[in-house]
Image 1 (spheres, rainbow, N blue to C red):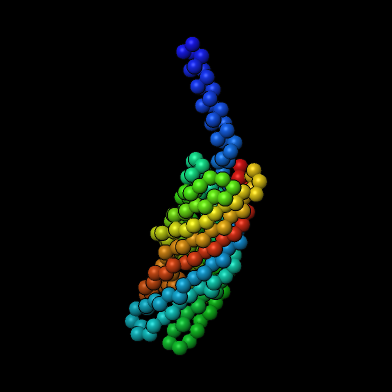
Image 2 (cartoon, rainbow, N blue to C red):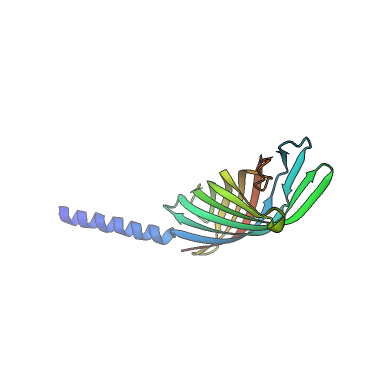
Amino acid sequence: MRKTWIVFLFCLVCSAQVTSHAKYPRNDVGIFAMGNFNPVSYISIQNTPHTVVSSNKSSLGGSAEYRRYLNWRNAIGISYAQNPSDGKLYWNGQNYIWPLMRYETTIIAIQQLRDGAFRPFLVEGVGVIVTNGYSNSGWSANFVPLVAGVGADYRISAHFDARVEMLYEDAKQGCYDGKACHDANGVVQNAKAGVVWRF
């Protein structure tokens, strides 16, 4: 009799695990349109008395994201984004503008707040912003020590979701790796909307 109960409980646990895997796919991949909104940075240049204003043009680009679910509530992931933009410096009464490409890579942790068709979630992580100013300012990079945001998934079918997300990044930017320049902190905002395939 005891062996029968042990076998029954074992089968019940295995059945629950199979059901859990079927209900909650372990991976998802998403493709998004992304709006990138950048703050104006007031930077300082060594031995220069003038105030220098630096900014990147806010623009529309694209993003891709992969998530691995540890359970229905928690996941880890990586996000990549690319936005065409402009670099702009206002210095001593003159505007200097040049084409620039922004690349962002972020390592994230996700916590879903509820289960069901509509699933809001929180995001936090770290990342790096890389810009290519071509022959004008070259390549530069800035570490992002804090990424935080909110979003929501809506189940379209068993394997497809719609997702919207707003991310805030605390980043130093504006100097393009200039040795005599001191970066300023600012909050970059990324608004994303797209489709996710879960598998």
